[in-house]
Image 1: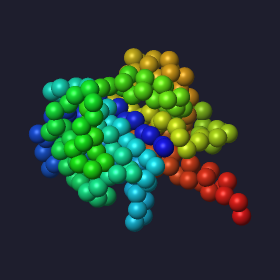
Image 2: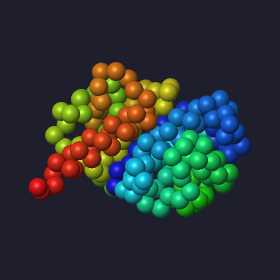
Image 3: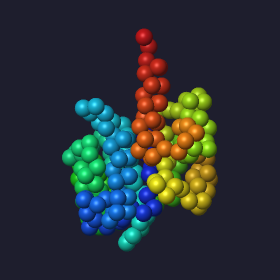
Image 4: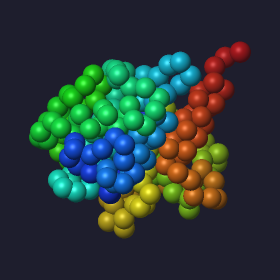
Length: 203
């Protein structure tokens, strides 16, 4: 299983935002929608072994996690409005410590970055933090197909969050010398892993 964690500092945490103004009224929810699509969509198919975890930290009720599971997802089309609609429905559910399913493959609960890091750490998962000052991804001997990739939104990642990530022993990797949008980073990560897996297939 491949997991993407996107930290969204401004994304609203109530399901009353307008799908017609996700960059404004929803706190750049459009970025998260693009990340979902970049994580899950293939041409005429979906990545069934990928999950996306949106850590929502905006007003009015910060500290919610929306999870998209590629194995079970339904009703997701390759456009921002479709993903935004599924997030909106998830946020209309009451948040508790345990996950609540809003639609097939989409789940919501209360929690933050520390919640996910602790849970993945208990499972012995490998953390990879994306940052332009990290080690070049093409110098990594084995990127693996079961890592947890952590990305920031348009605001970036705070010092406190970076400290939490470092304490979990995360590797910091870069996709190149120029900062990229989070959804573009996800496409490149998926492609690098696809190429590595294809190279291991016996001819």
